Image 1 (tube, rainbow, N blue to C red):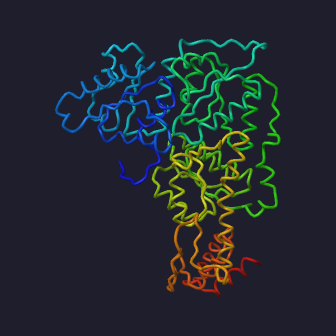
Image 2: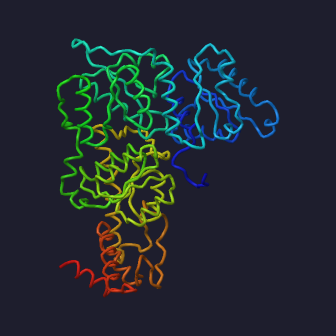
Length: 510
C-alpha cells in the first residue's frame, strides 16, 4: 500500500455507492467506521446532487470494537429498511470494516427482510473504484435479469430495441452522454427499453430481457454485466464507444448491424461542426501539436483517436490508471507510435509529462494541476474531476454534439496559450504592464528570472538564451528547445548561450 496525496480512484465501496446513487429504489447498507462517511461529499459537493446518496453507514467507533459490531450492522440494516422502504438492499463493508470480518452478506440473510438483499464482496486492498462499480452493477443485473433465455429472431414488424448500460452517478458527463445517445438511437428508429444503472430501478432490471442488444457506453462499468447478458439472454453488445466523429459514425454502423437495419446516414448534418473547424485556416497552426493523454481507458483511447486522426495532433504519450484495461491502452499506444503508461501514481505521470514536454495535456483533474505547474495548456477529458466539470449546461462527450464540445474544450486552452505568446511579445511595450501573468496558467506576477544558468537536461541554459527562447511561439518552443539541447549535446557544449541557440537554428534550418 502506498500513501498518496491524490488518488485517481477511491476504494471499491465508493464504486458501489456510485451505482446505488444512480439507481432508484436501491439502498446500500455499508459497514464502516465514522471516518469513511467522507464519501457522501463526493456526490453532494462535487456532483452537486440535491440529496444524500442512499447509503446507511453503521459508523462504528473504536470503543465498539470490543463489543458486538455484527449487531450494530444488523440494527442499521433493519432501521434502513424501515425508514427508506427500498425495492432492494445492497450490503457490504468498507476497506476498514473489511478487517473486522463481520460478513455483512451473511448477517443480512438472517434478518429476513421482505426485499431482495444483494451482498457485495469487494476486496478493498486489491481492487478500486471502477472495479467496485462494475462488480456491483453485475451483481444487481445477475440478481434481477431472470432465467436464461434463447433469443428468437426479431419480428421484422417490430422496431429493434436496446438497453443502454454504464452511466452512473459521479461519472464524467454521463448525464449528458445518455441524453445525446438516446436521441441518436431514436433517430435511427431504435427503442430504448432500459437505461441502467442511471435512473433504473430493480423492477426495470427485470425488463432487460426485452431488448435485442445492449449498448455499452462505459466498458469500465458495464462490460462485465454486458458479457453476462450475452451469455445468459443471448444479447450481443456494442464494442465501439461513440466519442469523436469517426467513432460515432462507426458506432452507428455497428448498432445498425446489431439491429438488422440498413446502413445509417452518419454525416452528422448541420449539427456537426468539428470537421469543418479542424480543416479551417484558424486551426492550421494546431497541426502536429504534441499532446499527452491520460485518464480512464475509455476516454483516453477515444481522445487519442480524435487528437491524431481528426485534429491532426501528434500523440506523444498515452496512459491510464485503469489497470484492468492495460492491454487496450498498450494496443492504442502502439498504433499511435508512443509508449503506454499504466500507473495510478500521479508523480509518475507528472514525471512523464515533464520528460515529453507536450504542448497540450488531456487528462483528469490531477493532470490539470500538473499542467498548470509546468505551464502547459490542459483540458479535462476523464474522471476524476472537480465541481467545474459537472456543468449545469448541456455538455456531452459522446455523439456529434459531444464532438463539438470536445473541439471547444481542447482548442480553447491552446488559443489561450497563443494569447499568452502575444502578451509576451509585446510585454516591453509601454502600453503593457510587465507584471501581468496569464490567468489560466497561474496567479500573480511572474517571478524575476535568476541570472545564473538554468540547468535543463544535459546542458545548462544561460539566462539570455532562455529569455530569447521564450520569445519563440509556444507551439514550436518545445521543438526549438529539444533541437538546441540535442545540438549542444552532440558538440559537447555545457552552456547554451545566445550564439548556441542561433547556431542550432541555422543547423536545423538547412
